Amino acid sequence: MQRTLDWRLRGMRSVLPLVLPIFCTAFVHHLFFKTFGENNLTLGIYSRDIYIPLGLGAVVSFYQMIGNGVGLRFRTRFFVFTLGLLVFVSALLKFYLQLIFKIPHSFLIVTLLGTCFLTLITAFLTTLKFSEVLTYVRKRNSAALYVLIAVTSLLNYPLILKFFWKQASFLTAKSVYYIYLLCGIPLHFQLTPVSFNLSGGGFAVKIIMGCSGLEGIFFFIFGFSLIQCLEKRSFNWRVPVAYLVGSLVLFLLNTFRISSFYFLGIQLKKIMAASQVRQIVEAAFHNHLGWILYLVGIIIFMRVYRRVEKNIVLETSHS
Image (cartoon, rainbow, N blue to C red; front, top):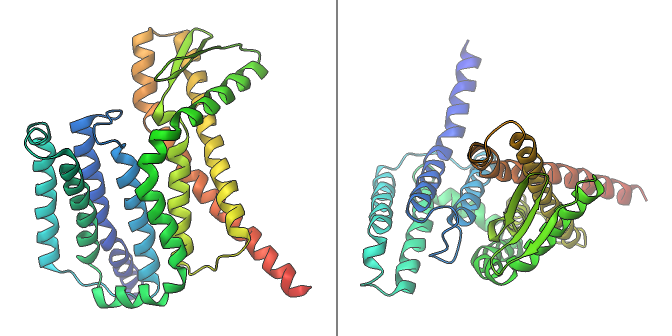
C-alpha cells in the first residue's frame, strides 16, 4: 500500500511542472487563433509554429531535468507573475487592431512575442528550483551547438517560411499529383500567385503556405536539437545525416497527410454535400492530423535513430 502511494506521489511530482507551461502554451495559441485565425499572417508567422514547439520543448526539458535530480518547489511569486503575463498578452491581443495605429508595428510584435516567451520561462520556474536548473544547464554546456541550431531555426523560421514556401509547396503539390497519377486518378494541376491547386475525382484542394511541409521540418529540427542537447549528445558525422533524413521523413509525412486528406474528400463527396464534406475534413482531418503525424514521425524517427546509433557504436567497439 505504501509503495503504491509513493509511486502515485512521484507521478504527481513528475506531472506538476508540465501543467502550467502546457496551459500557457495552449492558452496563448488559442488567443492568437481567436485574434488572427489559422491562416492570417498579420504577424508574419503562424503562431502555432512558435508556441507549440516551445510547449513540446518544455515537456521534454522537464522530464529530462526531473529524471536527473532537479527538485520541485512551488513558488507563489512566479505563479502570480505568470498569470499577470497571461493577462497582459490577452489584453495586447484583444486590443491589437486598435494599438497597431498608435504603436509601431515592429515594437508591438517584439513586445507580444517577448512576453509570450517570458511567460513560458516564468511558468517553467514556478515549480523547478532555479539553482538546480542552472547547475543542470551548466553541465551540458558542451552541447551549445545544439542550442544554437534550435534557437537559429526558431528565430529564422518566419523568414524561411516567407521566402521558400512556394518552392516547398510546389514540390508537395507535384508529389501528391504523381502519387494519384500512379494510382490511376489523374489530377489537374494549376498554379496561382498564392496557391497550387489540385482538382480531380470530384474534389479539389489548395496547397498554400501552411501545407508546404516546412512546418514539419521546422518541428523536427527544433525538437531533434533540443533532445540532443538535453541528452548531452556529441556532434559527429551521423548528426548532419540525421538532420537531412529526418527533414525528408517529415516532408514525406506531410505529403502523405495531404494525399490522405484528398482521398477522404473524394470518398465523402460521394455520399455527402460539398459543404458538409468541407466542414468535416477541415475540422477533424485538415486541422489536427498534421500535428499527430508530425509528433508520431519525430518519435519513431528518434527511436530508430537511437537504435541505429547504438548498433554503430557496438560494431565500432567490437572491431
